[in-house]
Length: 328
Image (cartoon, rainbow, N blue to C red):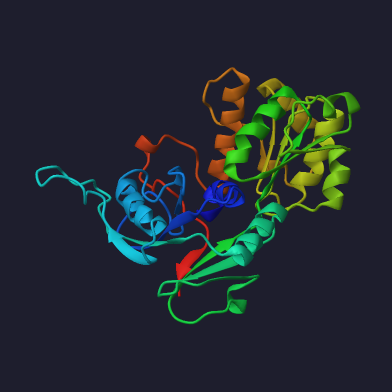
């Protein structure tokens, strides 16, 4: 989606290089990427993004290069397997994809998108599907300008991931969670922990009691809280307030014995049945990175209403429904 390639688009815009976008605006069959999936090709030949997981990217890049060289913006239909020889078997996801190839949006729209992403504000983005393929933005779909058929994408604010305890595992979790497009906030009242230097500039590390911070910044249904400090004086306060609210995922690190003690301490806490503990899926890992992966895998599964079992043992669609994007 647009958020995935935006750092690339913005970096090349700042460097004065042109960028062409390829947006997946429609399809007539199954596919590995949602509507709104985006590729970006810069004037130096580098590119980012994916429309199909690999099946049509080469074809789309050729079309994007032609627009980069001066051809007009246009929509094109491509199918996985279009570049196969007659005797080669087409992939199962062989539905036709409709792709808009157009230069990146003009400065006013570029600025609006960049500001919305930086400030985690919702924004609706419109691009026309007929020449001149004009771009516009607004807070809501109803406020958009423009006539005729258009592709509409909605950029939502990032859900938050609160990590309670500025630990080494929290630092690894924060690094991995950046690619999940979550705003990571680390909360810890201990000055020596919060000043460890383990957290990058993209992470908001706050010296505070977690329950007090949550009271000032109420959680939403898409937010998540993971207690990592191993100090009940810190973790329990965070869990009580998080479980009483709407956060979609509330978890706590620790062994089964530690979790049993935690459940006894929190026995009177509203929402205790929602607590994921010990946190994570059963991956059997031992390293910090494996533990972080286990926790984030459970978070993604819960976020998408899935159980986290092996794909080979299930029959649900591989991918849950993605964010809002549609043609009007």
